[in-house]
Every structure is written in structure tokens, then in C-alpha cells.
Amino acid sequence: MSYFKYKGYDKDGRVIEDSIDSASKDSAVKVIQEQGIFITKISQIKKKASESLLDKSKIKKRDVVVFTRMLSTMVNADMPIIEGLDISIEQLPEGRLRHVVRRIINDIKSGKALSEALAAHPKIFSKLYIAMVKAGEASGKLGKILEQLFSFMERMESLKRKITSAMIYPSIVMFVSVSIISVFFLVLIPKFKENFSDMGDKLPSITKAVFSFSDFYSSYFHYFAIFMIVVIVVFIRLIKTKKGRYYFDSLKLKFPFKVGTLIKKVVLVRVTRTLGTLMGNGVPVIEALDIVTNASGNVIMENLLIHVKRKISSGERLASTLSKSSLIPKMMIQMISMGEESGQLPEMLDKVSQFYDSDVDIAVERLVSAITPIVIIFLAIFVAIILVALFMPISNMIQIAG
Image (cartoon, rainbow, N blue to C red; front, side):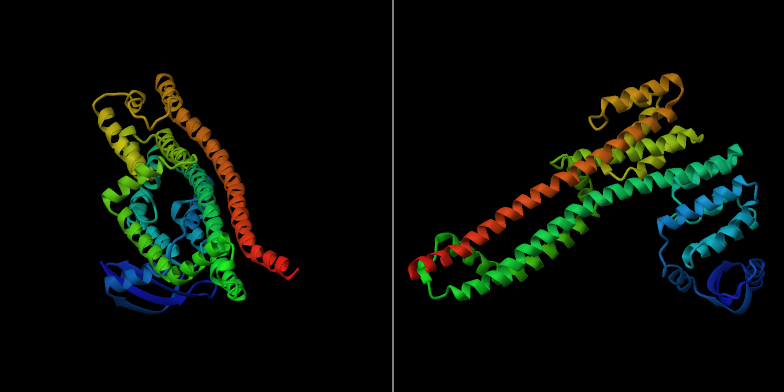
């Protein structure tokens, strides 16, 4: 397969610069012209150059969600896939996703199914996405399943936003707190110290302690900053290793102040929602568990799901296998057991995900509301100590002058 970079104009007169892989230059020109593009320049390039060109722009998950919604709407309107993909290109923002959709169109025209064409882009379309599209093609309900896939992606994006807000708020609060403390010790207190230099040993003990700490903080602040940067870099590298990620994921589930509980509920939402969605659309349980393992976002849960998959392959039921793990709540096991007995396991899994999703909402609100008063009290105590340390010498000076 050869790679070609081309430049041209579309039917609206807009300049198009993109690349395409094709067997020959003639076939590349034919495919580009079929997309309604008038070519002004086309040249063969090396594979690395083509990949570099594609990687210049990142694809946002939100763009994939919007693409899925448009495609589901068009398929539900009985529009042919290729025509629907052609229309979706016009609605997508300029960038790599447009190029990917054009490649998908080319693959479908060459005889591939939509799921096969999507599978050629694993960094954009997940195993879950491809499995659901494949199930939709097999059942003849592609439009309905694409709609469910869009709904699933929206709910997962919503969950991600909740967690992001829960993590960002404490980070901002900590940054502001450290900044305020740094301004006091690096700027304000040294200025006050100059004014009290004549008092020497007559300064109160609390004032001496504050001035000493300010001197220490000023002298070693840059070392502390470098140390923190090194710690962060080492930490990021460690959690990318297999052992490092295992220990960190294990530690996350045990974080104090119910942060660990919140993380555990998020993992359960991901697992139950993904498993329920896949099984509800006809994906076999073993294949579904394989996909869910990669989507759980936690190594401890991944190991459990790998074990569960082996046990189910040997004939055990899902609920009985999960019941042996302390990671899974009893309520969840009971609902899964009821689902297996009634033949409504996907529906029960969806109900479990909704239950823990609402629990995540409550936990995030409580976490945010708990952090605010703690930080306010901490800063109030800090400011009070500084004020006492600075105004005691002034009070003593007034008394002596009086």
C-alpha cells in the first residue's frame, strides 16, 4: 500500500489538504474525486511522513461521540452507510477524524463491513465500539445499537466529568493554599522582619519562630520546588510500570476520607455499564468480559475479571464467582444473581450501574463540600498565627512607648 499527500478544493470551494493510502496513484485519484474533491496537487510520500501528518491533530472523544450520534441518526433514517458517512464528514471539524472517516468510506467501498473498517483505527474506536457495531450488523439493528452506543458514550463522558470535577477542585484549593502560604513567607514576612530588626531578642517566641521558618522557607524554597518536580516525574514513571500501576491502583481503593470508596464506585459503574451494554446487544459473555477488562481502569479489577472469565469458561456462574471477591458489594452480587435466574442479566447490570452512578454524584458533592470548610479553617488558623506573630511586637512597642 502506497501513501499519497494531496491538495485540492471541495464542492464549496474550500481548500482540502490531506493524505490517503491506496494501491496506486490512479486509484487514489479516483477515490479522492469520488468524494467531490478537485485535485490540484498529489504526490507519493513515505509511510512515516503520512503518519506524522495524521498525528498533528488529536481526535477529541467528544468528536467521536458527535460522529456516532450523526451516524445513528442517518442509519435510523434508512440512509446507506456510505452516504451517511459522506454527510458526516461535512459536519466534523477539520482534522484527523475527517481523514479517518474518508479511509473508512474507502474500506467499505472495497467490500469491508463497517465494523472491519472501524477496527483498522483501534486508537479511535475501542473494542467495545467495534463489538457493538459488529453485533448491530449481525442482528440487522445497526441504527438502534449506534443510538445505544451514543447514549453509553454520553453517560461515560458524564461520569468522567464528575471524576474530573472531584479531582480538579481539591487540586485548585491546594494550589491556592500553597500560593497564599508562599506569598506570606517569601514576601510579606521578610518585610515585617526588616522593621523589627532592632528588637533582637526582645521579640516574642512565636514571632521568632515565624521569622525563622520564613528564613528557612526562603532559603530552601527552590530546592523544595525541584524536589517536588522530581517526585512527580518519578511517580508518573513508576505508575507506568506494571508493578507501580498495581500498587497505585490498590492504594487508590484504600484512600482515606471516602476517596477510595468513590474510586471503587466509579470502577463498578464502568464495569457494570459496559458489561450490561455489551451483553444487552448480543455480545457473548466471555467476549464482553474481555472488553470490560480493558475498560475497567483499575488493575485490581482487571485481575478479578480475568479470573472471572476463566471460571465462567469452566462452567461457573457470574454471581457465584464475583461473591468470592471483597471488591464486589453484596448488593451487586444479589442483583446479578437475580438477573441470571430471571434471564435479565443485562437489565440488572444496567440498574446496578445507575445505582452506583447516583452514589458517585452524592459522593462527589460530599467530597467537595467537605474540602471547603477544612481548607477555610486551616487558612484561618494559619493567618491567625501570622497575625499574632506580627502584631505582638507592635503591641509591645506601643506599651513601651506609652
